Image 1 (cartoon, rainbow, N blue to C red):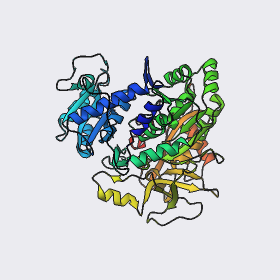
Image 2: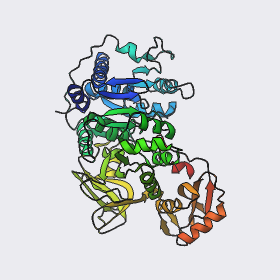
Image 3: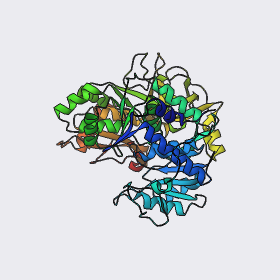
Image 4: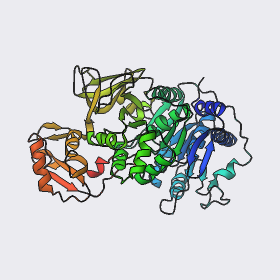
Length: 514
């Protein structure tokens, strides 16, 4: 029997007084966090919600997230984390598609009224019976939304002890919705065993200290933040410093103030830290404390990796995974040489290979599509047996990511298969172009996409953020690119922007650029 909530339970038993969560002036101990999670479990049980029932959670990185997450798990329920940027129509879809019976939703702010949008979506989801509002002001006694039940009022009188439901290792613990770049978002069912195994193996990938402190700026509703920061952090009894939304200046302040020694982020976060005008004193403090920097979510440009090393004197270790793989599948492991630009080697218990479109193995260097097999692979897409059968065969999950492999078995992402551009019959991988474009002294960030062309099928277009003060023109960058790339590769079209559209997790939204 196994329940993922053991991560919090065990930490609360062993280090009850240690700070588990820091948020602003709030500093909450492991024992307190566990007791509130127990109250949540008792609340759900009192409303008839138990093993196998779905509980949706819409919250940024706030103490509410682990309280509800582990409380639902203790009750044997399935957690359905929702992206906080969803609109009412999308919330209704996610609640209905997952068969959620309850929604815990943060109130938000006047600028971003998450609670109002959540409640509007909830009201149109027929099967969802309970709406609990997570108030911006914990002392609030009246709900600002009619019909919404205040979280703390609902917990009043609930016991702060609870015997967790003993779930089977293969029972679903969390349903994570994919970004839905093609078609409607699908819910990946991850089991207690998937998530616990992935957290425990991930814990071995970088050294511990007696008391680690992690900056939690990756969204916890995303699997990267959940597993690699929250779950790994609780497993090693770390203190989690919460940042609801990544802002470079505030991130630097927290890194300095809390003496953070572990940071995990996506490439655009590292780019943000590089572009921040950090004082020499703050840089010195960060250099003294920060010893682990992990990147994932998308490929880290080499220029960003070099910049972080130069500024903060820390090596950024790249890993790779997807929502469907819990998420970690490969990493630049500490027992083997790290190779910059590589996603490393498969982690313990995981196999990786390259395949073609027909699932045939691709030998040697490749390129080919990455396929993965092991303890991290999802059970399937919730309620979608056909989509599951399309993506999993004989235990192997096909990722949609194109990679090559070197003689030592290290993998290198070339691009998403759906991002590949076919210009005049030639395959062009945007990541290669982006890497080179960012070596130009006047280019701060670049994203390359294909746009329709009457004779070539697709033409190559680069969206570029210039470095501050730069007067670089389109003609100049096109001419420079012509010198760097084969004739069929270089971007013929350049559009300069002040910012690029990104997901809540910091990935560049290429579908919007297209």
